[in-house]
Image (tube, rainbow, N blue to C red):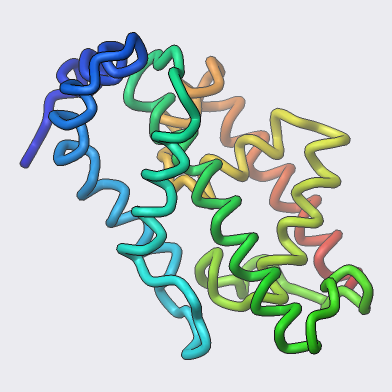
Length: 193
């Protein structure tokens, strides 16, 4: 079902103002896009994975519902928040898997593995790699929040350059510059191990 961006934005705004019927009409319009993003995340997931695409979408959906009223700006804002929630769900699951492999220890207690950013085929490909990426992103967010947000929206959210630019109120050129610089910084940090 193809939905007009204005339809989605209107339903988001109505839902944000408390119209539960708008949420019921919105769900089928955005579900396919969220499911496609979840499949992209989980492509290449190893056999011990605890999440499947449908479960990831449903967990994000529950967190969106539980977040209360949000002053939705547009569909890009919705997908940006969804990307943030997907990142949190994936990180939580990866940390749980990594801890289970070490008998319940927190992953930060041991040495962080050296990770090549270009070899992370999907954000969920490897629990240790995902945890290392999240740690590096947290450090980048402390140093340069905008560049960290660009990585989050493009890498975890699957947003295009133009969608990321709209979400952050930047030019496409600024997004591409931030993307390149943040990737270079992350690659250096991840190789340190």
